[in-house]
Image 1 (tube, one colour):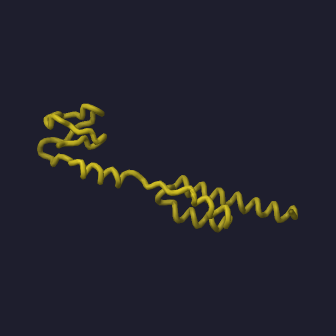
Image 2 (cartoon, one colour; image 1 turned 45 degrees about the horizontal axis):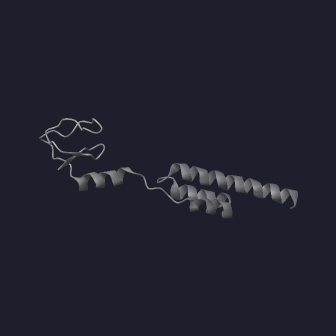
Image 3 (cartoon, helix red, strand yellow; image 1 turned 90 degrees about the vertical axis):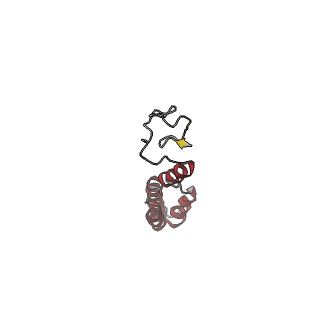
Length: 104
């Protein structure tokens, strides 16, 4: 069995030069054909792991310190979530100053 290296579609005719589903070029006869296991392991290394939104609680409760901790923990896996946690931390710090100054 041969699978397309781009979309994972099973190619019935191994002599096809292009995938019938996505049109990407298939492996030449000199290259080792990719098996389903190879495709799945390759895809799992490409797909980034998504982190839980529970990380937003850290900057909410700890302010800028929690935002910085969340940022440095998350920046490699989920840069958008890391940046958002840092922003939430800054906002919580500003709110703390405003509430402290106003005397609520």
